[in-house]
Image (tube, rainbow, N blue to C red; front, top):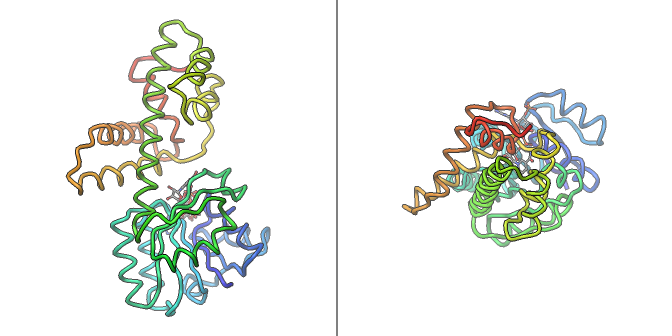
Length: 290
Ligand code: NDP
């Protein structure tokens, strides 16, 4: 199958590499040099220009936000062919996706939102979980392609549902990272060794992905790798809060989480990792994790 892959970032680069083992993959990236390197190293083809991506049977986007996806859709619109499937793996905004899907449908192009979870390591190992919004028929088509990127591929509902559940589940994770950091900081200030506090947490009901996998390396070993940009995580939580707002839902925890993450992003900057919010938790208490 001819696939056009747009967006060779931290996630897109390994995803396109896996797809190229099974399909004819043409890549396009804003910074062309990355596309050229991908072609050299992974046997993909570089699109001469964005318009060339329209020749593919399926177009996959994985860009920072729905805004960039929309820009690409606009530029490709005059070139698109009837029967193409557009798979947007960005963690995007479900409201924007629904509008995008309508615009594409007018040109006979089907759209599914197919955000992913599992981090860069999941993209590297093709073990992502992929949540898809779209019709049952489009889901089946997208699944056939994305099964080279993920082990668990779930149809969650109509267009937009994939993006909605993705940002909601990331918000759960954000709130968990924050509260776990707060409680571990209090334990530390109480004089309890941080490794002991983590061990007890992980043996009991406070256990989570945050306490087991995300926080120990940072809080105990003081290693703060850039795994997932806080800017992306903040964007996800803001979208989740906007969905709640739209529903007139009362979600004070979600609202607070959004405020805390946005304040952290303003403090830490665009290149910070999402778990660096734990540094802000310490900073708010006039201390650090050292
Ligand atoms: P990166 O920041 O690593 O890459 C972003 C990509 O988008 C790059 O290819 C970049 O091109 C391109 N891009 C940025 N702006 C534009 C633009 N205006 N027009 C065209 N292309 C543009 O992002 P990730 O790969 O980390 O994340 C992509 C999406 O996946 C996000 O929505 C994120 O929330 C989600 N996600 C990320 C995970 C992670 O662990 N990183 C995990 C799960 C989901 P260029 O090379 O020129 O900068």
